[in-house]
Each structure stands twice: as C-alpha cells, then as structure tokens.
Image (cartoon, rainbow, N blue to C red; front, side):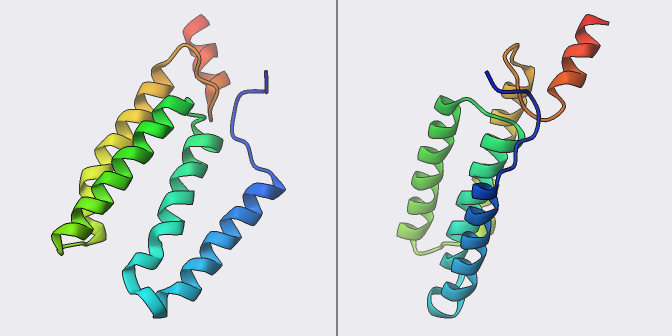
Length: 118
C-alpha cells in the first residue's frame, strides 16, 4: 500500500499542463465549454492526489457531473455557475466522507490518525 498524504508525479504535471493548454487553445473556438478539461482534470487531481477518494465515489461524482452538464446544455441555459452550484455540494460531500473514513489516505492523513490515537 502506498504512503498516505499528497501525491504528485511527472505524469500529473503533464496532464495538468495538457488540460491548461487544451483549454487555452479551445477557448476562442468553443467559448466557455473549453473549461471542461480544467474542471474535469482538476477534480480528478483533487480526488486522486489530494484527498485520495475511493474509486466508486469518483465514478458517482463523474456520472453526476456528466448528467448535470448535459442537462444544463440541453436546457439551453448552460452556465458554469449553474453547473458548479449543483456539483460543489457533491464535491464537498465526497471529500468530507472520504476524510471521515477510517481508510483515509489523503493529505493530512497522518495528522488525523495521530490526533485520534493521542
């Protein structure tokens, strides 16, 4: 099992850079929709590297995001503020549930386990 805490690799740096460049290149062509790579990969990084969220929770978050994004787009009233107004409470719920889990391995995991045993 890997060590608890924050993780960052060269591959993470590449993915983040690609998401940023992709967004920058797409912005003039597709407008606000160009933010999809940053939002998607940003949450992926947050869940996988910072809080180390369980895969099932990540997949639930992703499914809700796709439905949320699709519903706002289909309604013709898409705005990132609307998408994030729906998505942010789920993001917070997923992170808090993971932190409270006895199997938590993310950022500050050692500090949390030391407090419980002290």
